Length: 216
Image (cartoon, rainbow, N blue to C red):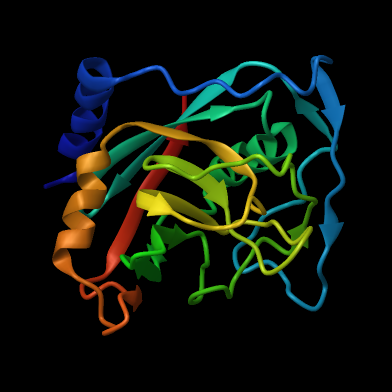
């Protein structure tokens, strides 16, 4: 399917199947919060991108549209739940950081069913050249459709993110950005295509490519 047709499919899918994402408590009553983005010179940016501004909106939502080689999907991100995280994601989208990239990890085990993306070079390698703190309460859950930041330890958020296609029985250590509101069948197709690892945790059997990402 060519890109224009995929774009149209995204819009149709959103119109027909959008549901209200579960709302998190508003832990940031102020309309703007300050974020701390720290350069990582030992891990420079994998694609040209500046560090985001320190000011992040802490109210409202933003819809992020993805087109992949398996189909489109839409994520509704909650600024109130993770103002710095959403601010950073939107910044990376507008910098075209995620365009023309691959998702290098797909899991489908009894503990974890996620697609991991945002690593430009390979799994857990190739970030934006900076990091920022977690936004977690310790009460996070990761049901089907949840979109959250991946990390390599506390306070190491960057560009890596994951989408839960089934469930994720993991500790509440990952900042929740929002939820898929249209296009979960895209992930079902990815899982059906298989994983190139007998433990069901590794590279997809067939490459998963993100063609284009934009916000609305």
